[in-house]
Image (cartoon, rainbow, N blue to C red):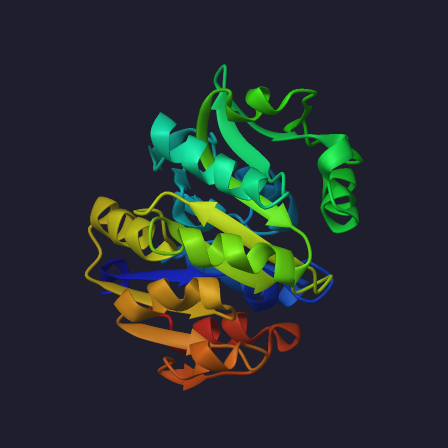
Length: 276
């Protein structure tokens, strides 16, 4: 039955085209399926703020998974339904490890009830500063918080760190933290800049997908993805589909490799196979 399956798609490189938008065709297919009662949602590394903007043509009414599983958020009200956060000792360990290697990551936290990310402008690499500018230049995005002392980076309840810098500088931090936390070391699909993301140990698309599946009373998960941060989700899904532009490691786990994100592969698959 249609309510038995949760269809879960990654966004960037999967549901979104290379211009970071969904096509009119994708919007029409998903909206028709959602109206018919199909359980469709997405799991992304993005924040809820940017995810909502790039999916504005899609009427998703289920909770969504953001920040690589750190949050499950009501897609309509943006109310947080589930979160994974660092303990004070853990966030200090992560921050101190970066700083010991001459790096100053962006720290994401809930501060006074709002999602914010903090940055030290003079400590940002060129690539990291370009990312900050991409967020501060958007009038709808109010999360950026410039700080002037390193101690302020750990204000609030910290749930995510991201550092954008040269690969050789990031790798020692990754090697030290990878067994202690959920670490994702990859390159941005749009800029090719090296990213190191650090999340609480229990934060992943997979763990969030299991929680969402239980909340909805679904029996199966069918997922779609393109990058290594989708591997945990692929490992727990009943069926998993990698787009043609996906990383080789993800393709190796896939039930099937479908067409590319620029060919609306997810929407075509859903139109042909989703039970309505």
